[in-house]
Length: 166
Image 1 (tube, rainbow, N blue to C red):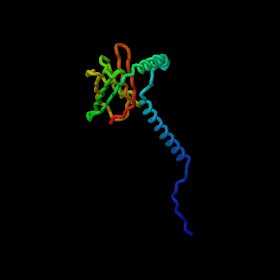
Image 2: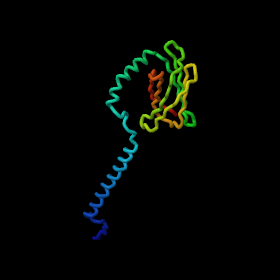
Image 3: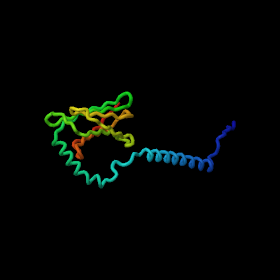
Image 4: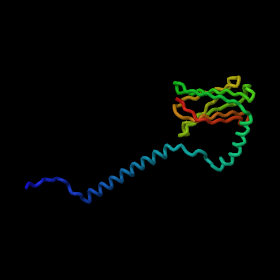
């Protein structure tokens, strides 16, 4: 009978200890990295004060009802160019189809996932119920387009739509 030369190392307490400590060190390290990434990329809260937002809610309902009573027709077109500039054009008509002028329009492109990318679009009146504005450095992807029109200190129109820019 031949003796087999087996060179397997015996399982020692020292090896088990080092393996367990290494395992938990890797798991802890990965958890720390993931927590750090989650905390640094968190854009923040949607509203700073839920109480204030709740108090303003009735005002928002009243403004929406008044906006519906006006029955304006507002057509917006936004296009992202090759130079990463987004051009927003808005045409506004009253309930009778007459163009509305003298309003102060503003636009806002908001990222649904990260507030830090939000950009305001300053709009100028072109005449005949048309308004236009341009924002630079707009990345492709999903955005919320918020359009507001003011007359004096009163908000006359507000619209929020999810769009995709290529």
